[in-house]
Length: 153
Image (cartoon, rainbow, N blue to C red; front, side):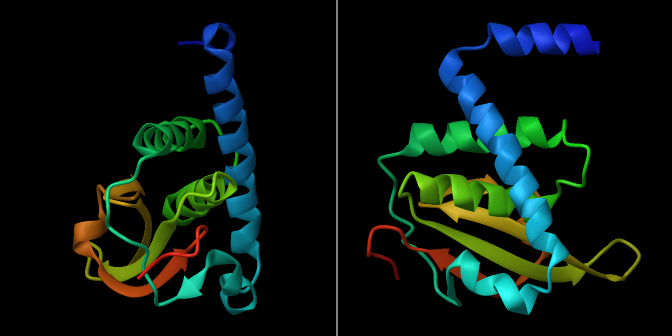
């Protein structure tokens, strides 16, 4: 699909989906900028360290899935790196804006060559918003609970 077809397809989308895609693109940029600064100086912006939110099913599942889809689709169109941490931060901020709790996980593991690698993923309720496809190969070393409604574990 060439650029003109992609632009046409975008303009044919429902207005609510277009707004969500534009928001996802903006928060992916936020996530990338977030990565530019030392982690210890900004980690407090992610939520409560070493806490998790509830695994209870969310009443916002459709909205959470739409956010997940928007992040995954738009990350392919950024001109900067939009990998796991950037996607997780973007998803967390989009959920926070809607007052939906989420937990960001940071994990470490070894790649196929035996080198240390890191991964980030995001969960809201029982649904994994981003990073679920690779999370099983990593050991959790940090969690950040973004509790927006006063609850959490």
